[in-house]
Length: 373
Image (cartoon, rainbow, N blue to C red):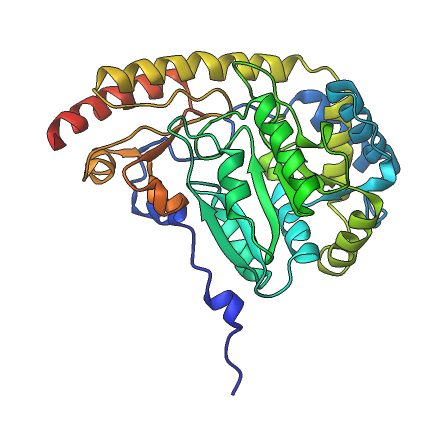
């Protein structure tokens, strides 16, 4: 009799989705992981013009259109001084597919994947789907990932370790020294560093530094996307960058599972990357203002809150019963343990919503906090 694959049976529906389903229709949603800004007009026009010109009717190259890959390559040169050959990247169906490709191409059954805990929910699930063994590691008090912790966790069975900065769910940004260390660890231990940089441009303090800047081998691959930077989550357009030998292995997975990213989305992404960047700057400034308001509100409620330096999340420590009390009062937050065992005692709040709603939610959160103390 046909049953189900064990690798799928190990994976459950995300705890984030369960929270959304439990919330009322009129709840204030501080659980959503997408910007509340429109896709920039020039990105939309890029897709519309391509559609009207008949450029989107057929498959593109498996790796994506040459012009998009050149735009992505130019972005890495402009932002980080990295020279990326357009042949050494794949346009994917969002950052999620890019993560999937990396793990499928590099992880054999039983091999370990080290990732932050609390961390993005996909790392654990995609490791299991690849047949690998998840190896979550804890964070520092400021919710950044300590390179020493990663290095201590590496064994002969380790295939990949994941770095996510700016991070979901914590909003933490790794320092330049940390990123140098992650690159060194990848080089010296001959283990792949998967750098998830989907939030790379949403940074409030300091600067984002990709580990690829510091690596002396090809043991770093980078995943990013238009999703957060350009408020294009629904367009499903991301990419993975690596050495040609790694890209060619990932392409074997991509071409059979996906063939190519959506053609209209590719033209929209090209326009987003090559056009005016003012909408990005305006969105980041708005997120920083919201972050400051949320931090003040949570601290006024008496909660201990590590200060996030990027993305659009904050992860306060909360008393027992807090998440349920807040949800019952009509504000959606995500319990920290949805992101790993070490997330217990925390909650993730997204401030990717309007300022008026945030202020209303903070008043409710203050009342809920006092009720459970």
